[in-house]
Amino acid sequence: MRSFAGRDILSLKEFERAEFEHVFQVADALEPIARERKNTDIASDKTLVTAFYQPSTRTRLAHEAAMHRLGGHVTGFSDAKMTRAGDFYQESIKDTVHMLEYYGDVLVMRHFQQGAPHEAAKWASIPVINAGDGWGEHPTQVLTDLYTVEKEMGSVDGKTFVCIGDHRMRTMHSIGYALSQFDAEMVILAPEDMSPTEEFLAELDEKGTAWRIVDHIDEVIGEADVIYMEPVVQPDYTQSHQEKQDEYGMTPANYQITRKVMEKAKGSSIVLHSLPRMDELLPEVDNTRHARYWQEAYNGVVMRMALLALVLGKME
Ligand code: CP
Image (cartoon, rainbow, N blue to C red; front, side, top):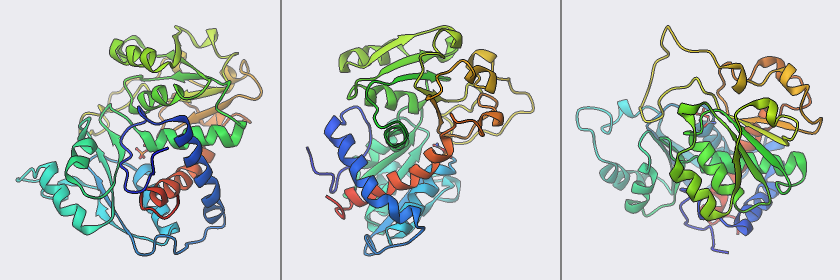
């Protein structure tokens, strides 16, 4: 297994089984710190730089909270409009990253352009973590999600993941790649205009991910171990920012999880949603035995602690 020290975390395409397992073990070792709400001095000599060109609540703040738990320092921007990258100058990623690498020891970047963190990694001498790039990938979210499945269900192996919602979405790409390393199936349920591309499905075949497409939730709800959700009413992820319109659609029932739908599910099945949600996941599900999205959000801090500690060389 390659060392994580100094490494970029850009994609789960090339992540190997042993690497998933190692990251989960490191997360387990660090989890008591988060549970006990302590800040340590594990990375007290290091600084995290966040560069967010697109809105975020969880991903940016979970990385920042994780760095605080590790005792490190945090700087960065959450609104590119207030930087030279987002004003008159439209400063390039190359020039921006040449600055940011002097300001800290690890860079976490979210961008509306697919591949932007990869471009940043070409110019940065410090590790770059992809916090979501356009419709591309969201590796730290999916590491969090699979860690949650491990903790809540014992193993990712043997599980049927029913992935519902917009399959152009970056989490859907990362989970498709990740599941190639496990004995698990990806069942795809999406509106026609949000279906996975032929290129992506060919990649899944090449990587060996077991997948199938279904048309209706009733076909699969009884088989699902993990119900993995994304909205279908959501912004265009290739834009830096999008205001909510006065008129916007409602989620069709076929892509909605309600208490009634969950009555047909296995008692042991869990619902994951990386959040934020619209009306595809009703609050009435929050108090059922299936809801694990708040646990998933907590694990988001734990997973980012593990990733930061690893790429900064503080854990082996
Ligand atoms: N899950 C997730 O990526 O949420 P944010 O957009 O709030 O970071």
